[in-house]
Image 1 (tube, rainbow, N blue to C red):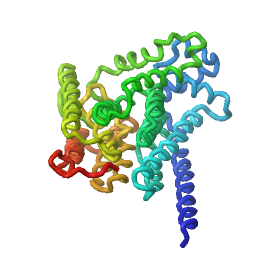
Image 2 (image 1 turned 90 degrees about the vertical axis):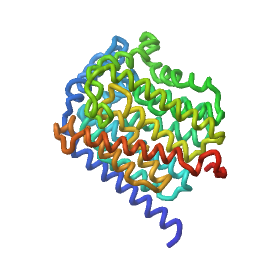
Image 3 (image 1 turned 30 degrees about the vertical axis):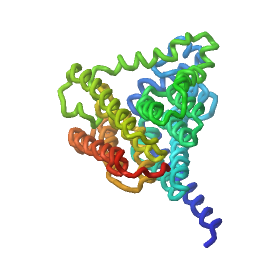
Image 4 (image 1 turned 120 degrees about the horizontal axis):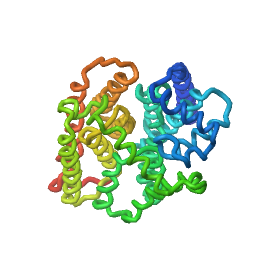
Length: 381
């Protein structure tokens, strides 16, 4: 069989799976989640009647870029629920494509298309867009684009992409420890690059800024969100707070501990005196996200979404410890089940234990004897 025929066969399979995933998701489009009924539909209707002026006047508790996309949807035919969910489904596919590019970059293309397929078929990806009507695939797509540009050493574009991710969801910050560690250890980009993150957010908000929305509103939206959802230390997420009482003092203590953990990682890589390789970037990125959502207070069900995706990409790069993406996605799915269906098929505290095991396992994988200072250095990937 020629290489051209193999490529064509892979393309046919990929297109078929993508179309099949859209059909599967469409079957759930009629489901109206609480978030859709209370927020998204009202925002859509207001945007349809009042236009972008409603964003300038303070519509919703989402940053303007997503609301701008909702406004653009009002010009398309079809029902609101189909258009809103289809927007997220399109980004599901783009998110899978970014996973494909990263795996292709680090593995010379072997099984990259399979990574794309698995990403778009993940249970949490299907539920997030087609049932919940959420948009986590949008910011995750731009985070993955940022990582891909990072691997290509296009640092300014990488940080601008992070800024676009920031403009859609504050949860992009879970990947920031990776960039901070890279700044201090590899020293390949300027600290001024970090200023491109708020700049990217401002550029995405520009249409409503030009209409009179105060510039500061591009950032205060996220401050309001942190206060809106600070009643519980965790909401349906399998993290350490499933094992602890709901006392805010505990959350503040663990907030400090989380910072110390990241500081410890930074000190380790500095003392190692070896450049972080491109493959290691994926491990550190995934570990950083898991540490953040596991130990930081006020985390919710969907906040592990980026880890769901990155864990699959990580496995296709390293091809070991398959239990890591499996346990991460099962733990994430457990939280979705509680919110969407009121169905607690396994206690979240049990998944909390599983996630701690995953973090320790990945930590030992990152801090491995093969890469300790006294071992012979390996070439970076």
